[in-house]
Image (cartoon, rainbow, N blue to C red; front, side, top):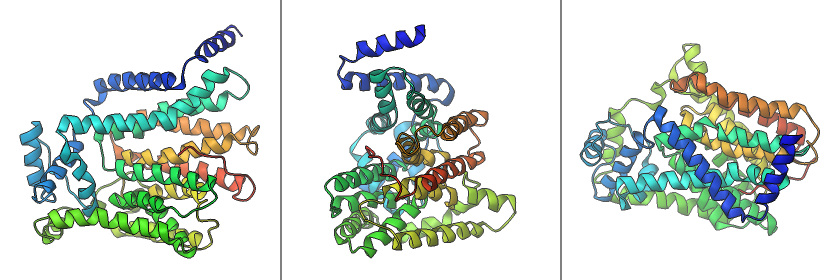
Length: 413
């Protein structure tokens, strides 16, 4: 009781502070937390990110960004880092990486880290912290406390910061896609060119959210939502054209693919990879999972409802299912599960779920899963179970809630 009274007094004292002060305070806390992690992980963006930065610079001056040896050599000359050549399988990623060519390496790294931390705090840590500080401890405090702890211990985001992958682009695409969807929903109309433009960013790394794109595109076509389709097409052209124009020869891309191993050659933390490896099946067996999941996405897209109200099924089903069935992905790609986990918490805070104790165990299971990363944080191929756990929990929430039985809780992304 004394602790509760002290917490209430503390929250009342903070009530007079602007929310921006509280927000930036939590950013500072997270930055201090990240600084302490450098003792274990080393300096953020000190590996693959250097070669992504080099890729953007090489393309900007008309050199071949798909030549792994050239990229590694440029990286070593400009950052003093001797790295193994990093295979580049994405034509569209090169255009996205052109943004780094406007900055020095240290400036590009600062841009990546600050924008990532800002968005993460804004979307994941600030909402539950604000609620606790404003309302104090009460009977409804357990959910925001668990929410804060889940995201404070979200290992994929930490790995995301340290590796600096191109997953930042589909993450930004989904972030603005959901924000624009909610804006369209409030205005009771769904004709939004920029929503299609935002979705086009998922093309940079299509295999980690391929079901989201497929489901949405089929739904838009079914409802003749041509402005969004046009936005997606324009975004696709923007991502393809600069690389095609700046690349010395289009054959450089295809010849580079012939010289590097297939991305399926690695054992990656996806369920499809785990099953294929465990049963000693050919690597192409992973495409069976992709095909079955894609058929489900097409079927759901054809039978979908209002085209500007797709967010619930996307977050709870197709974001995690994309990572479960992806032919290959890495633990830092699981950062996309932020949208799923956040929406699970949003749904559990509605009247429909209030008082259902079993869902607190589900949330506790997510927190426990986060802590399980500490058992083996380095061997990424052993993390295939994490999106499976999130997917099972999200399916339970989706089925119990029912798309027509409760009103979708307004999400801020």
